[in-house]
Length: 224
Image (cartoon, rainbow, N blue to C red; front, side):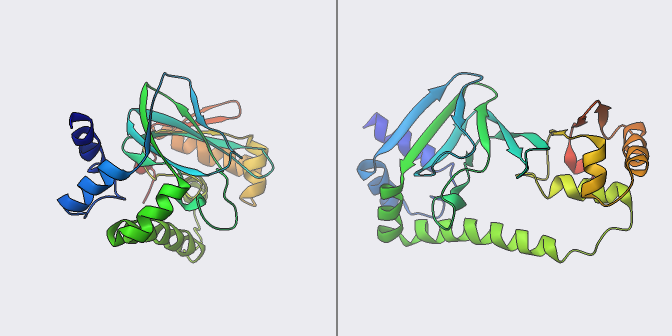
């Protein structure tokens, strides 16, 4: 009974189960096959390219998330705090593989749910189905909206937009591993201008530069 109550409390933390009444949550807690894992710092939870055949929920702790460009010439590292779901949009659709790598930044408690269980829950509980659709639809709409943003006339803001568009969250610490020449190519500007813009942001205390590395303590401070 205590284990069931513990699962019940955990479900209340997750957006997929929010809005369910007590009766439905009790049924989910008692009838669903959840997996529970405890990962020590440094343990890889999911690697880029792994098959997305289950949902992973971060219940406690913080994950380090690494995303590589398609040609692997640059990457972005960020932190993902609990509670969170790891790329739920990839359990269905054209590419059912993870596109980011997730490593335990601190000791982490994880919960997993096989795809067959996800399918059953979407069939049996309309709130679960709507929550999943809302999560996927919201992400799709945000990505589409980015394409229609007015192009920035300021190079510093173009750099910030470039980074923000490739992150999971527009807040928190970000580490961008990229050569200055590559960033200039992607922004269609000169290396000198990009260097000047980055150094200007550094002089304002908004980021820290080192060879092939841009450290941002909180991306939110750079956003307009």
